[in-house]
Image (cartoon, rainbow, N blue to C red; front, top):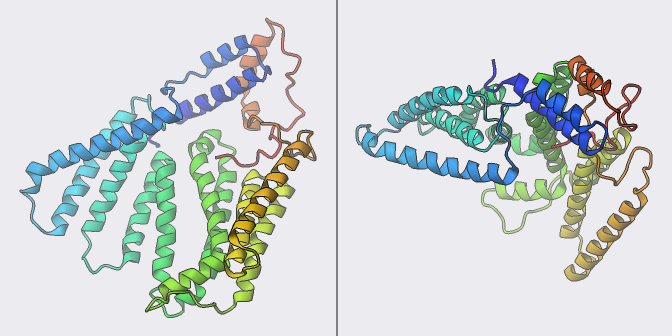
Length: 395
């Protein structure tokens, strides 16, 4: 049981893909119309700017309504923190019931309004639970209690924003809990890297298990993609010399004005460059856009780290040379990849999930329509792999 209609989400994805094919003249307008009738979509069609505006407006409206509700009720509550926790929890549960009824109409799906309402409900429940805890409760206990609630919300709503908060809470739990043990500071970078690798592997495994069921795969696609991105980013940051050294300086008591060199500096200097290079190797080998992007950003961070501690040129000269080098490399890459080179191209591609070709109903609609009209000569079913050049991961 999920908050959103999974069939409607799948239909929306099929229709959006069919619209891309129509723009590429792979199917005709009549075939697109037939697909739209065969896969009806009840969700409201909006755009990103409208979604952002409605998200902000809904948050402001909910904040105002909560403040007005607190005026008469607040005076009836005790001054203790636990009473406010019970109040927040009660309001959160009631809001959750109302939200489910609202989403049950089936017209909203990640349209800004529902995302804001989900955020408000989860925030009320999580804060209400944490307000019930004593003031002396350690931070890692708060994270431990909040994480299951956030994960339950991710499972039920498949919301990307809640998934981001859940991942951030997960890393905050690891960070704060490592500070409670004597060897925590020394082992923290390695724990972060190990946990990040395991988190990425778990997200990839879950993604593969959901592939045979496209409805579930689409429901959690954005959340799983975000998990992979954040896990790989934290893996880079966990091995970066600058991050480890400066964080170590901040955790010292008293904190020095300049972070001192760390033990095992050679290892972290190696990891600073080795991890992004490994990402680049995997990206080129598997034609995975996510790894290629993170490899590029990781190498930029590695160069900045080297520049922070090794001064060879003045800042102005280094910035000019660095910017000129990046511009020349970008121009060369664009020109070189105008002609596809071993699966890589600079031509914008339309993501074309091959699982939609496995949908017998979709194929039947297209085939039945093509029997009564001239089929586009560019359209050929079967015998191909529709993973775009470097499409790998999209977010």
